[in-house]
Length: 207
Image (cartoon, rainbow, N blue to C red; front, side):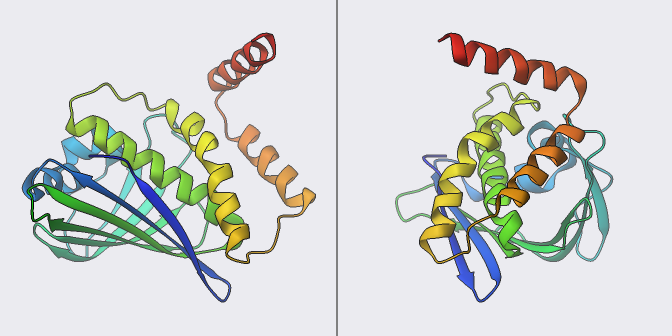
């Protein structure tokens, strides 16, 4: 999978993100990676059951036992389309659509859309899904995936998506909202990861 391009869009107070990338892998290979339990466990999180139409399931992130995903398959067309109702913790439910299209020169165009985001969640959600697509790419190539790296990569990507939001006319976040986000993150960060952040922060000042 080549470079991943992410674009945020806005309709009234609803936001969506579209992530797109070309891959040298065929649709069958990628379809397996996004629907089979063992594959999902390797790059996304452990599902509680099979990914079948109409069936609800949960996903447990490898780095965050206190985070929960509740999902349900709305549409499943092998090997081209997977549409999911997706809820992260107590946030509003989103619609996630993954489309796999044949490229004329071979390989697959991968397109992931997340629909129904709120302003306050849009940049972080876009950055998280972008990082997850990078994990999918690493899985396809057989590279190591470190679950605890998700937050760090998400935090690197989030400012770019926040800039996109402002460019499409989204209201700026207040200082209170930003502080609330930081407090929430700290309360949900395992102690070991807090220590990792502290060390990285210290070295950042020493560099």
